[in-house]
Length: 433
Image (cartoon, rainbow, N blue to C red; front, side):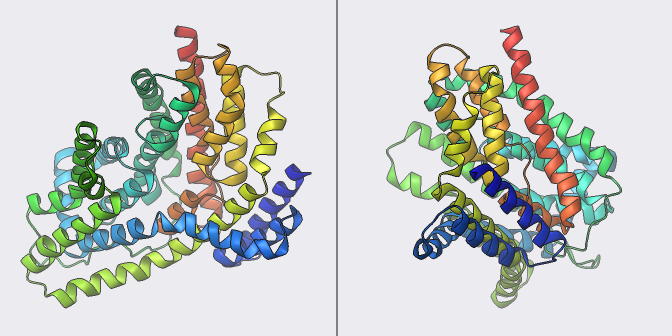
């Protein structure tokens, strides 16, 4: 019965958003309440579950998203984004800029959490799109595909690291195998797939659009690149330093993404604001506009968190996994299927991966599957079919100003290709090894 209820709730949400044209946050709240009642949550508990879903989801993203939006706005309006775009195009040329963005997404995605990498890449993507009038989705999707793959496949991201511990895998081997699987998956879901999306219509997002004023002097190349890349450099430096000084409390504080982003805002305020002749009031006005821009994204992410929490509190993901455990399929495929199905139901790649791991771990411990390959198989499944219950879906839709239909045809298909290509790569590695 839980399977039917989840399917009906997802269908209702889709209908409210597409046919009913309801605000996404309101639709999520309504479906979360209906699903909670239908799945047997006591009525007095439902408000607390919704609040927990909002807090757990937005609490970890609020400061990063808001500060990332401020940094992006400063980079755009100061002319630094324009300087970066010009420099990139001079180096790679308009014909190959998509590959430059893809490589940047992959490199940035290895040390950074997905949300941080997303908000760092989007300003750079849009600076190139607006400057050279390139197709938005076809240009930006490969870089975001690279971020998604590193999030699901490669340590030190939370889900792969947790799966390595769950299955007793070797971190070094998992990373090596993960790189071998990740590169083909990115190429298939990124540049190859995006060739079909060159004519996809988008709205007019102005969040990171730089003002079209060729008379104003641009910041220097060094200041522009260093300011835009400063979060990456600081977070990478923090991760390396923590490896050698794991007990240093001050280092854990300084390497936290929110603290790093706050330091980057101060640096951008000086380098791209005060040193460019702007006063503090003008810089703060830019930051305030960025907060207004980010509000719709935060609301839809909060709504997705409500539905995810209702499904988690009612134990639906556990029931689904237990039902699938008896299916007569190979262990690697079974782990992928479990993670993929839970991902489609609850939206969270991390929850999907860890829930599926608990079900297939006994098979790995019995020697029925290579633990390193099982980490990658479950990770690939956890990236499958991202849709309306996933925060990443809404971030992509809002940033790129797409319709629900076109978000499904671009983002959701890309994530599905990543999951399928990942499983194929794992099975090929199994045959080779």
